[in-house]
Image (cartoon, rainbow, N blue to C red; front, side, top):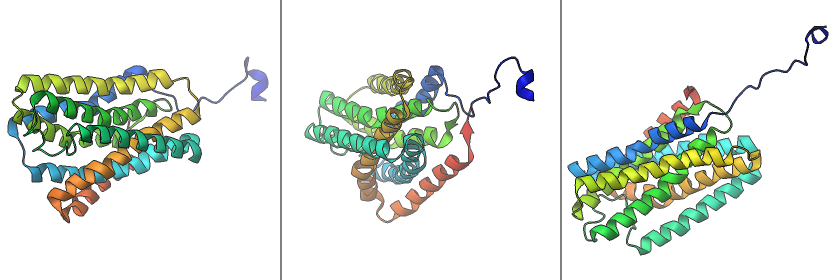
Length: 268
């Protein structure tokens, strides 16, 4: 009856609508700026190993929850098992390969605040910057990819990426300061890293906007695979070195925080 009255066929509006490229740029910056801020703070305060290790332990729990509920879980919801596992494998292999290359440059423990003490300024800066890009780009890209499907941003993703950047920023800022680099140059280096990570969120959104669910799911999972490898290879081992059994308590707190955010809050 209603259809005969309406001048055009009636269609229910979509339940969700993707965000914009400006959303991707804004939230990519919000999540990545902690790299710059923490690097500047680290270069001035030079935090101790135990402080950074404690933050890494908390971050390990954050990243595990982020992977479970907002990356691999989201990839599965978008495209199913096949693209999720394909993307995760690609992300794992890419991170492992890049990490081995960085290890050959002498950047094996880039989240250690003692890193860089025996390196030249140029070598230390290059290795730390490359390490931050390898870690930060997939994290920020996951924000832009997530906006392809919905305008609602998971607070857990933003908080997870923001928190994950802090220990690396603190440690690398302190390490670069020990190589003799000025505070201004350290701020410039990490400002450029922050810009690159922010742009990765924007580029992920712009370049993949017209892609189908399989590609989107695979790329969300690729970011997740890279972060999973980072968590297992660098975050947990370096956290355990400085916290021992306390890593379980701090990691559980980080997990609980992101679990709560993931299930309760979203940003429009």
